[in-house]
Every structure is written in C-alpha cells, then in structure tokens.
Image 1 (cartoon, rainbow, N blue to C red):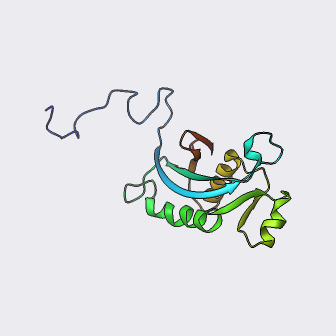
Image 2 (image 1 turned 180 degrees about the vertical axis):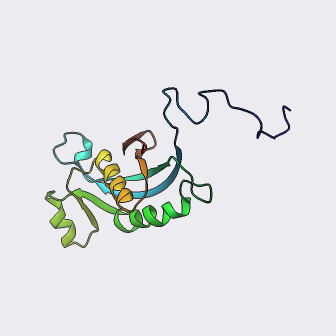
Length: 163
C-alpha cells in the first residue's frame, strides 16, 4: 500500500539500487568535515602564493565501504575525529606548512615558529595527499580527501572504491 511506510515487500526497479548503470556495486560513503588554520608559501611559483600567507582551511575526509559494520555504519564519525582531527590539530593546525628545502625553514625554527615540513611543495593538492596518506596508514578506507583552501576552491586526492 502506498504511504504505509512498509517497504519490505516492494522491489526496487532493476538498475536503480545496489548497482550503478554499468552493473558494478555501489558503495556506502561518509564524509567528515574538519576545520583548521595553516600558513604556507609555494616555491617556484610566480603568483602571490609565493609569499607567506594563511588559510582557514576545511578538510573533507570521505570514507568508503562496500559493507556496513555491525552497527550499520561505514565508520563512526567520532572515530574519524579521533584519528584525523586529532592528528590535524597536533601536526597541521596553526603551523607553517613548508617544503623542507624552503630557505625560511631555518629562520622560522630559530624563532620557535611551528612548522610542518613536506617533501613536496605545500600546494592544496599535496596537503590533501598528506592527509589522505595519513588516514589510509591509520586503517581508514579513505576514498577521497578534499582540502578547501578558500570557500570557492578545493583540491582533492583519492582512489576508487575497493572492489
């Protein structure tokens, strides 16, 4: 009966639920939003981002699973916070994210300014990858990390859902 709220005996149209148009499985995804502040500058760059400056960044960590756990969850949002937000707060928040070969590193460290040193230029793309790699190393099935550098611009790093 329509409107009864009892969907146990209804069938979804073929191709609508559980499989995408190509016939592959659809995964469950959850996304956690984490705010943090950081400064950086880009080496070998001619634009204004070559100068020290800061951002109120927003990270979105998307975790994926083809199956839900015993609670009916991909992962508890609190668990993402314990792993990722705790690490971001300790390692990236209110720090200068710089390439380890940046000549300003020595000066900033001499003045006890907190820095997070990267092997690559600290672009939004590379910062998203650093966060992705950390989350993955901690056992989260991360599909994608998006770093919003401004309210209108983000970079992402990710992999396809597990098979």
